[in-house]
Length: 63
Image (tube, rainbow, N blue to C red):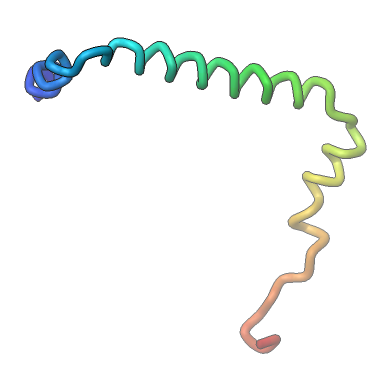
């Protein structure tokens, strides 16, 4: 199955740039996410973690 996909992709000019772009986007996203997590204040993270618990749940009777 993979050889059919690979054969079709070889016919496209410049297709080799897409894996490089994907890797750059992936690496950039997770690097920025890592920096955000490391530099975030503990109080802010605690409030985010309790956000779902603090909000009242909506039941069918409330509608």
